Length: 84
Ligand SMILES: Cc1cc2nc3c(=O)[nH]c(=O)nc-3n(C[C@H](O)[C@H](O)[C@H](O)COP(=O)(O)O)c2cc1C
Image 1 (cartoon, helix red, strand yellow):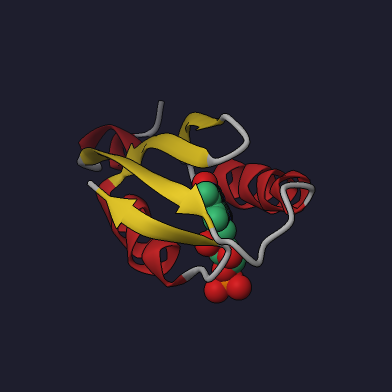
Image 2 (cartoon, rainbow, N blue to C red):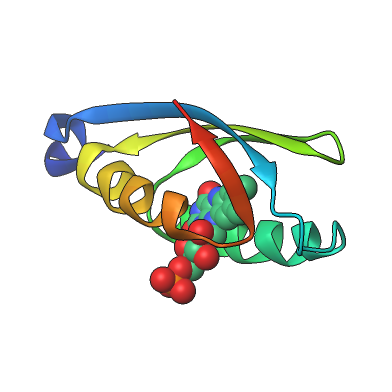
């Protein structure tokens, strides 16, 4: 591992939310596709659980990357009732 990567502080974030009433559950496939690509290229790993109604997501990675993603997530109109 490179020195810079070793000294980058890691961070994590856990939240739950609800699929927006006007969002079709099939949209979750698109969310995951985009998330996989973006997360992989930004050093973010984690899990996303969806039961057909609610999401629970855990993400971790470099603090600046996690912070930037966490700033975007609650603004996504495909989910509501963001709790963390
Ligand atoms: C439940 C849920 C989980 C999401 N998880 C991620 C994620 O892990 N990574 C990601 O890049 N986008 C995720 N998104 C999508 C982001 O909210 C956003 O649409 C995406 O980052 C693209 O943002 P941009 O259009 O501003 O670039 C998620 C969306 C939802 C509804």
